[in-house]
Image (cartoon, rainbow, N blue to C red; front, top):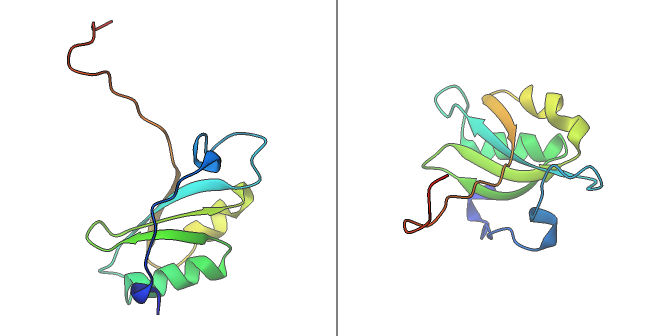
Length: 101
């Protein structure tokens, strides 16, 4: 059962730029409507069956984080209970003492 896994925090060079054109896979954030689906674990299993390598399941947020080939996005989005499939994006915020530009 997926809920019993120890979901690790992804790290390493392949998470630096998840949409890099030379990367064979893309990091995805999959949002799940847990009210429409049987369970988040069931949706995560179905996503794995569609090619997603699940890295983390965040039950409180209804989110599954993982990696899959770019061309798998439509198949992932078609899984029952999935509301969106979005690529991971890096966001940087300047420190409070930085000059605002």
